[in-house]
Each structure stands twice: as C-alpha cells, then as structure tokens.
Length: 264
Image (cartoon, rainbow, N blue to C red; front, side, top):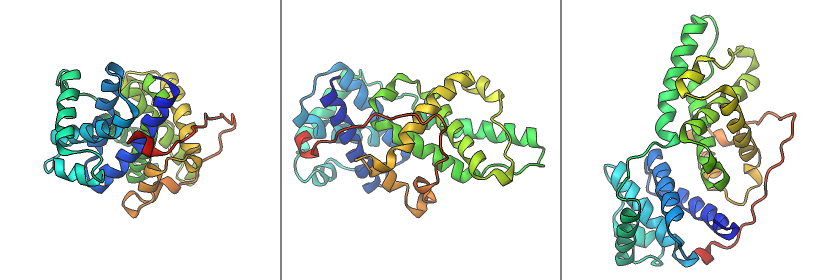
C-alpha cells in the first residue's frame, strides 16, 4: 500500500468512527469493520473515489453481523449525502463478501479486551488479598479501549496480532494508572498475564511503546474523531487524561492529511 492510500485509509477510518458513533453501534462493530476493510484492501485495488463507498459498505456488513438493530441501506445513503447510492452499496457489499470468502467471524483486539481484563482482575485479587487498592477498573477499561481505537488509523500497527494489541493497550493503561495514582500503590503487572496472553512481557512492552507514541501525539493529529468521542462523559472523558512523560522521548511519524472529498 502506497503512502497516499495509507493516508486515505486513515481518513476513511476516522470518518467511519463518526458514522459508527452517529448510529450508536457496538464497539466490536467498528473493529470488525476495520478488519474487513483491511482484508479487502490487501486483496483488491481500490480507486480513491471508491473508498467512501467501500467504507460505508463494509460498515453495513459488520453491522448486520454484530448488531441487533443495524442501519438500513437508505440510512447509509443518507449519511453519505447521496455520494453512495443504495444500488452501489449493495453491489460493493457483494464484492467485499466474495473477496473475503464470507469469512466474517474473526478475532479482533476488542473481542479479547473483556477476556483479558477479567483475567487481570482475578489475578490482582488473588495477589493483593484485598489489602491493596486495585486500579479503577472502569476507567482502565475505557483507557484500554481508547488506546485500541486510536491505533486503528495507523497502518503500521497491522504488524501486531490482535492479542498483542489488546495486551499492549492494557499494559500501557496499567502503567499509566500506576504512575498517575501512585497513592493507591497499585501492584506490578502480573507475570501470569504473559501466559494468559501467550506473549512475553517484552512483546507486550514493545507494542505498548508504539501505542504510547500514538496516544502521546493524538492531541496534535488532524484526525480527531476518536479523541473527540472519548471526551464525552460516557467514557469518563478518558481522552483528556494526563499522559505521563516517557523519559525515552520516542518520536512519532507525522501524517499529512488531505481533504476527505478526494476519497469521495
């Protein structure tokens, strides 16, 4: 994938986050949407002017799979301001499903998040014996989810397995709360999590470093849909959390954003 398409992919996903929020869809629907989108782009050449149609069609596929009440084709047509016609959406849905061989059931980072957090809670309770204050689990979950969503626009993060991304986001969230809420004296990351996630702490830590850079630079990124979403009370304004300074001062790649109308 060339640099122009990487940039357009990021813009498209940022737009999909807004649409996903507008329709009040489940978090897993967004991650499944991105998964199908990337699998299709990996197999097929897509013109820039067809990207919005592709994104809208993939979101509809994921919605039909994950949601009880999903948007109708006419709703998608309306939200694209008529740029994507109903017949075009249906045709693109068919192309996408044939390309991915109707393999819609996949493991995404979000599908693993609840599993890993429940395991982490159990390990923490067992180790602390109720004598040490735990991290704020609700906010820890929100922060991990926020970090996971931030990385979906970053093409370079496709190098990581879903399990590594989930473990990395949880690890980073854990370290942040351990630093921010030092009075709680939160225990260290349980080594047993390496067995549960099937990854070494080094693998998890390397991923967490990349996630930290993305999170650190989110405020100055031109794509703000995800950060704006997590500024709401619904998510405890978690995107406004104070980010501890990294002494290594890792530098991030700057993405140049072009007008999304090009993708239409």
